[in-house]
Amino acid sequence: MQIVNISGLYNVSAQISLADVEILSEKGFEKIICNRPDFEVHPNIQSSLIAKAAVETGISFEYHPLTFENMNSENIEKQMDFINKSERPVLAYCTSGTRCAAIWALGQIGKMSKDEILKTTLESGYNLEGLL
Image (cartoon, rainbow, N blue to C red; front, side, top):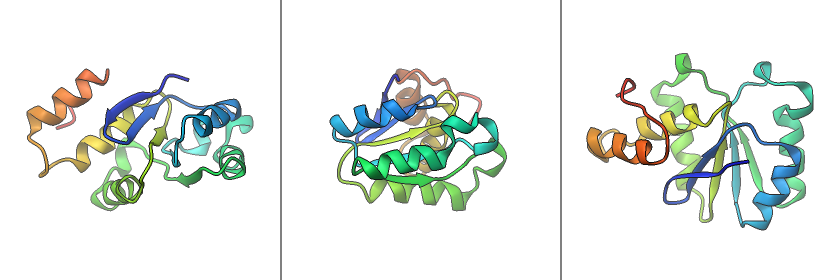
């Protein structure tokens, strides 16, 4: 698992495994957000299994499946609430981390300039030039 810090407490990664949950607990993560719909993954890494492992290690878990078609204002606000209500690091994951980075970027509109948003995500390894 490669954890990529986007900004502040918000981190993203590609799909995580059950073993990764223990590592996140050891690193002090407060919350895991699954942005990957279950229909995309093998049954052994479905959100319910990751959620169970997370709760057992003291990490809260949010299943917030996203596609680029449903990144609407309601889902952007929901993701930002998950992040903003946290006091320790948060990890959001999907297939590659791109959706997790994209929804963060969309949540920064009006708070940061377009150039700042794109620079932040690019420095984190996500080129979102076509998104904004």
